[in-house]
Amino acid sequence: MMNVNSTKQIILIRSHKCRKSDLVERFLKETELPYTVKFLDDPGVKEIVEQFGIKASPGIIVGNRSLNPYEIIKGCKIPEPEQLKTYLNELLEK
Image 1 (cartoon, one colour):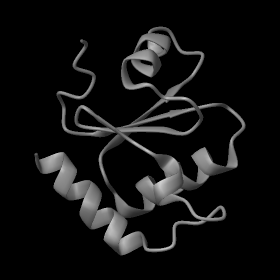
Image 2 (image 1 turned 180 degrees about the vertical axis):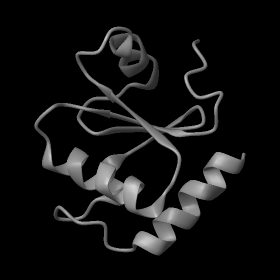
Image 3 (image 1 turned 90 degrees about the horizontal axis):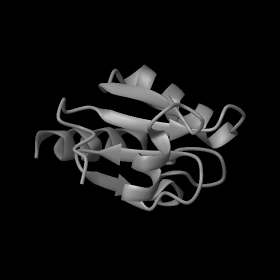
């Protein structure tokens, strides 16, 4: 198993045209959480997608854990951004 996140940052795996990916990326940027973006067609991303069982864009990886984007995004918005920021910070600290 490949350790994709040894640098304590969030990895956003996205397609080029995805409103939900845009939303998550904008949230990460605005909250200044450490993150990197990888596109589904980038070299090596297929292996990460398979390793974490990512089925749709956006894929969100924190540490060595994949988060379900549909637990975070409700109707094309993030309903509780401060709680989400706290939760993601807690995961990064583990």
